[in-house]
Image 1 (cartoon, one colour):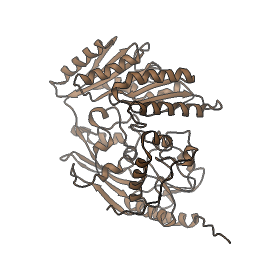
Image 2 (cartoon, one colour):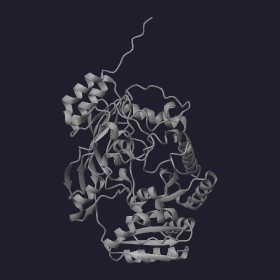
Image 3 (cartoon, helix red, strand yellow):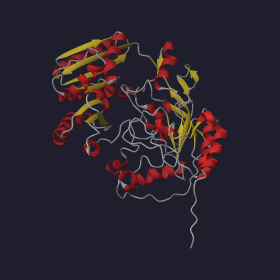
Image 4 (cartoon, helix red, strand yellow):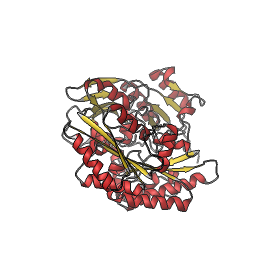
Length: 487
């Protein structure tokens, strides 16, 4: 019996996409699509079949209708700064790049809201409202280049997420194009909408439920006063214990960050802040903000706690220029790590604050056993670790070894009551570790939610959940679910 093999009609698809976005909005040449073959996790690479660059919600909807009609999978991409392979293209799919959707559509300071397209850069939001005394709180280290659409997909955090929360805490509403091309509104201008929190479901879904084309953000009033403290310690464990001591004292800083000695010296080599003592085992950055009368009291209490926990010195900055100087090194830490090694592999585990000292000791032991140096930079206040495993990809077998080492760190985080991701997402990198956190029933339930939005599994289909292709081993197979109407 002859079996009819259906092939994807790429010529026809290309012609239809040209009618939607024009020749300037479609990339078909393999050499031109090379720049899109990976995101910030450059160890995984795959050229897409086609790259489409829409500029409007209507164009995105039309593109997804083409994908739905021909059952072609798609991946959405913003600035490509993600660190989990979430925007890794598919060889037989379409990559939808939102970089040209970069307009700030509305600024409503009376209600402390800003509406943006997904390609708007994170830092642009604050720049648009700063002269009126407002700012956008989520501030990833890549905020001068990462896009709001990508922040929404990964539920990005940043330095100030301890006090002010991550992206989901600042997204009020979304215009979303579902995988079948339907345009829907989630949330709205009212901070607390009745009914199911579909906005919360979408934020952090890593492009598996559709594409956000308009995003309503909450902006905050700038604090009356801000102080940044830089405390240096002989050991990183002492810095970790200080974080817990500050929280126990009832103080919730705007942010608390730790950098170890490797990171300190890398930053000073590259940025030359002349702020971070090169001989310190670790530095702790603490930012406190609030009323004019409040901040001096907070900075004094934090300073006393740091000294009580063994700090050698505590430097305090209140002037804006000096505060930025202290933060400059931390913001440049990932980039500066390139001076330490030809390659590095960054992880994104989360642990309870009370386990900081324990985990740091375990990571040091893992480093010694494996023979790979590990630089530690992390959002200490909420226990979000960013260990950078230093290696040389030119050495045969090194990549596999550091991937395994990264996996051991993630398992350690879960074992101590934490999570395998705090802000970088699961993507292609961590899908195999989802069963470390979730039972088969949990994963089945998540897939049912996914199927309600995307019954044909066209939206970023190989991300987030373990599959045989991404894990290299048999994985739990998810049943096909009927389409569920949720809108």
